[in-house]
Length: 241
Length: 241
Image 1 (spheres, rainbow over the protein chains, first blue to last red):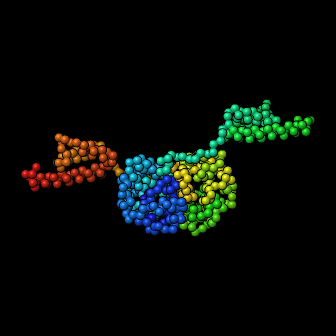
Image 2 (spheres, chains in turn purple, cyan):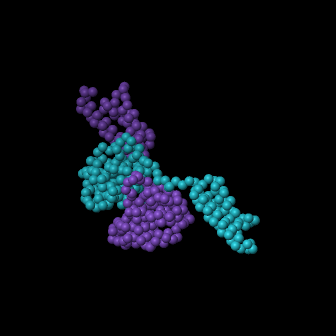
Image 3 (tube, rainbow over the protein chains, first blue to last red):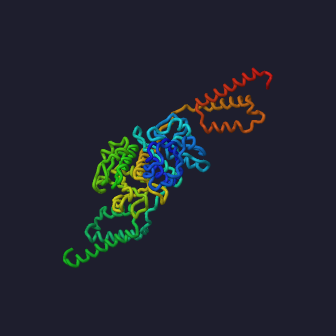
């Protein structure tokens, strides 16, 4: 990641944090206005080591030495003969290229972005989709989106798994519905002669929820308790029915 | 966007800016520690109007009133029975749902994230892919990624077009190569009896570059100038050859 002429040291720190969260490590600063700086350290959070390892160079040319592909970020259309890609497509390009050479992602100063001279050193212009005519992204926010897209390009759109619960077997679910039907009849919520749509609606709800084994047990426990209450009631009021 | 118990007003401002850049407008703050605040205004940049319109409420329940889907963001695995989606998939879910109801994207406090009680109010947990075990994203950076994914889900991965240049016609390109071959022979860079791989390499280079009409004109201009120089040279040194 190459940040050119960054004005606010806080943005350098926040960029370092964004990089670290996405597994990137090499930060190059071209002529930062103030670095190192306590504000950069504060915003870097746990990425202070990455920040300390950041290289400071006087020109973009120095920053790009050794790289074989430079991708410049720009929020607005520019007179530029190279390819303009979305940040997502640019991340895939970068990843493909990184197999054979070093790739630099280049960001301009907060207020002005990359100059035409800086952009001319880039082979690809990348842009982050967003609302036209509105304020552009904060620098560190743009670095975050780019780093995130690189991570997803490299590792896929992975998420941690939800805790694994044992799904209910279909016969357990059918036994639950049979039980529910008996109990609903006993509760006089369901008339077996005119069943209407109550049971199909309940089936639909629980089908959508993909019942787990433990949930079936909970629901059957509730039904059993209702059965017990109905049983007690009918015994205490033997003539009522 | 619902931000719960935000500690740093700067993050509220930066979130507002991230939202505005992606065409979002409704910000709800649950028990912010300090709001309004000059730091929030400063980081909001052009999104001060959005910030001023932000609703401040005492509980998440208040924030979610009227919504029919709440998507909670969490950086780490949680004991949660609902679906866990990547932010990209969650953005598509949100968009699909937004046709028929209001969707809330819910973010927890900077240090602790959403509590289990807060997450239990969400039907979906979304997570932003990133390096495991590393520091998580800054709150406003996470809001930026989520807002960006919503924008891309809604509008597609659109970029502004590069300035449109007229591509060269294939016959113009062939005429260029024929011209180049003549000139290279005259320059004694190419031996027509032993052409080797010079012309195929040049063809490959220019095929990859997808020549524009204006570029063909420039290259032919250069060739014509070389022709002229060669012509002059052979006239001033008539016996050399």
